[in-house]
Image 1 (cartoon, rainbow, N blue to C red):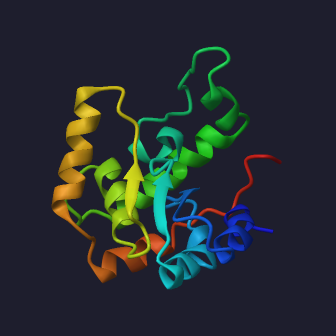
Image 2 (tube, helix red, strand yellow):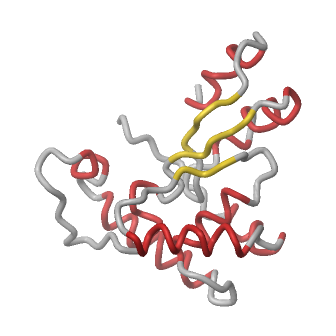
Length: 160
């Protein structure tokens, strides 16, 4: 079963007012069942990991090294960094007409879904916060761009 679907039963109880779920260009699974129910029940959605642990910043390269013990060392294990590089290159080819950095577009993707109440990007650097603010100010992406981004969903399982 999809991980976002694990919250469906809890939402049905009426006991919660918001959910926090991984949602980004690569992981669009909440759109299938979770988001429609949240909209129906007026449940808030906090989209977390909107930049795929840094994969959607465009800064991950095949030779990127993480601090020993850092979560991303495991998240981008094996062939994952090469796969991310290839998928980011494909995204950039498809987004040549869209203004903003890849990270800004990724945040706008999340904010363009009417089920999403808020997005939770990282804030380690001032430049990151400024970029996130630019993305929010730029508003929703147009339907054509959103359709293009639908084709970049990545069916993968981190835990396997």
